[in-house]
Amino acid sequence: MDQQFLDEEPKEMSFVDHLEELRWHLIRAVASIFIFSVIAFLAKGFVFHDIILAPARPDFLSYRVMCELGNALGMEAFCIDELGFTIQSRQMSGQFSMHMLVSVVLGLACAFPYAFWEIWRFVSPGLYPQERKSSRGAVFFVSVLFMMGLLFGYYVVSPISINFLAGYQVDPSIVNEFDLSSYISTLTTLCLACALMFQMPVIVYFFTRAGLLTPEVMKLYRRHAIIVILVIGAIITPPDVVSQLLISIPLMLLYEASIIVSGSIRKSDLKKLNQNNTI
Image (tube, rainbow, N blue to C red):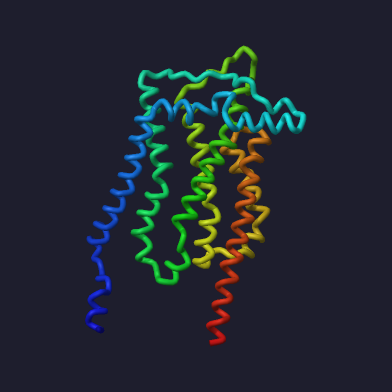
């Protein structure tokens, strides 16, 4: 029986074996991104008309919701009849380059849960059993928060930013004619920035588990965090108060949620410590 148990134990892998294992995980992750990128590339009409260029049209879902909200509040200014800009491609290879870029970005966004799972499969065996147990569900929560941030950036931050920039003029004689690359880079930057910032609770969770962060520290530096969040909101959004608040308020709520997460982990660790001392 003992010999059988020993035979079933995983053998120690050499450095070269680890590199080979990492190589295959990366290959599968990159392959998933490539597959989704190819699908996005082939679905050019749907991707550009219904996804990428949708926030540049007045019939976009977010604008319609804002209009309905404005009508309910008696504020007609919330309704957008037209966006005062046109999109042009000023380079010969501009449209093809943006087609490639958008396909890769969408491939990365769609394949993110699987790609992250592949990386996690490589990392998790190196963790201690307690660490593996405490990080259970990491792929699910990271993926959910990533998608939530992506959708928040696409349906909330991007439309408001685009609407502001489209209507901003230093002089009526200047016509807003944006290059396709400028529009797409603004849209993708806002969406991906929101997706990454929504990972705050997960980062706080692991930092608390590692003993690098406590809820007391987060409460102590709450005011500093609010200032940092406002600065981040001002950087990634156009220079108007509404857009800044729309990105800052959810981040503040995420910070408060992170304090709760850190506090629950802290209580759990203290409870286990007290139980071990009692024993």
